[in-house]
Length: 150
Image 1 (cartoon, rainbow, N blue to C red):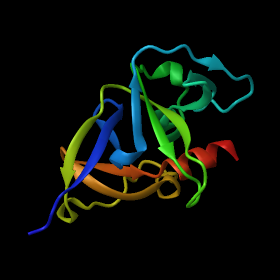
Image 2 (image 1 turned 60 degrees about the horizontal axis):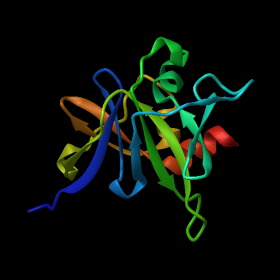
Image 3 (image 1 turned 90 degrees about the vertical axis):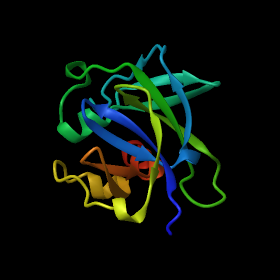
Image 4 (image 1 turned 30 degrees about the horizontal axis):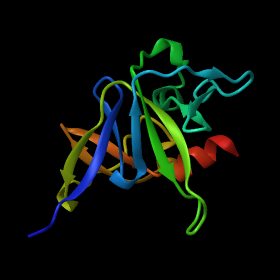
């Protein structure tokens, strides 16, 4: 019998989820004051002060759907940890989420194709599974934030 893996899933829009490995999920903030960054892309146009760092705040729904963040309500920020390569320093970024994340069990039987609503999914995802009859891309924070900051 297959041992399930644990994934952290969070909604980036109503009924749409992304997942992170649990080791990447660091904190959930419900109160924050974004620092606007002039001329930054609309999907990553603010910074968040967290533990004496300034983190980029990415709105995945805006990136995927090409909509300004003001059109999509958000309630929380999920801080994610990542490394750009082995032995590199741990870095952090923040993702806007619509509700609190959940931990769920996932097996190989849940594997799925990436959603077909954006060409960006293959560039920022390492895999995908189905949950509540929806594809849930497993994001690689290093790919996601390196893409935005390069």
